[in-house]
Length: 360
Figure 1 (cartoon, rainbow, N blue to C red):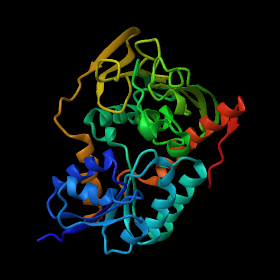
Figure 2: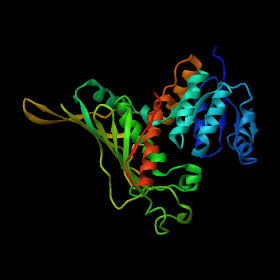
Figure 3: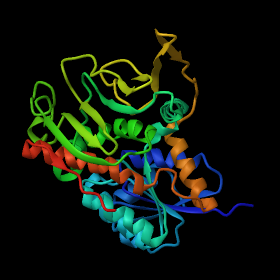
Figure 4: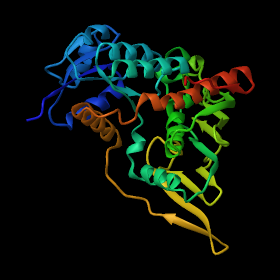
């Protein structure tokens, strides 16, 4: 009989409810504690989700004193760094919601703490669990494209601006880049084995979010709703990144991988004003190549599935904890994703290209 894993949840907002649902799908997993900085909110969360055996805490450090196998960190973005570091130092494996952090320095410390303590830091990019994402990775890494020298990724919603904590720089750190842009970056970078970024030249704006015609919380909207960047990597690779929460356009285009022997075009799934980005599944995959001198396009079949991608990422985390395996999506890797977002923010503010300094 398997040991029952004891899980704590830090942060009692909406995304924490998705974690509860996912953990409930798994055998021998028990949520034994919930913490939230808002007095009484953890107790309300426990009552709402009927977590009858869970303790409520207003201070997450008290939760970390318990005997736990892992914690889900579902706090606002600005709290990811401190909460994660404290959890790792307390000997807990961490399932962290995206984005990893607000700054590159924070992400580096988080990854280094995981390495030093030997406990897991897993970052929640559930789109990876779409089998079509694995197809993209397999094609790119198979060598069929030759040398990949240019990648274009991102996407955009015609209208898809959230509110609440998402639109406050003080709480979220960044806007569309942290919310949905990190998914697009992960899709492309993971397919290429997460190359090392060197420089970023970026632009961002928030013309829609700050306009009462388009957002009911315009007066407190101080993050970006649009961003674009050119990122240079090692090995003579460049990436054109673009992301938007709102725009007067139906799409910012597909993700493209251009190689010396072939190309790959990937479109996101979904229709409507909130679609158009890679925070969900894949719509189509097309392989462009030459056959005997003829321009050829091959449609790669989309794998239909009924997987709950969010549940899959939680399941993978639990199995890694239970079996003593490495983090499925390790923080050490996602540091490079955060480095790009950090560079975009800095470059946009300075209105010039910036370098990315990563530890050796």
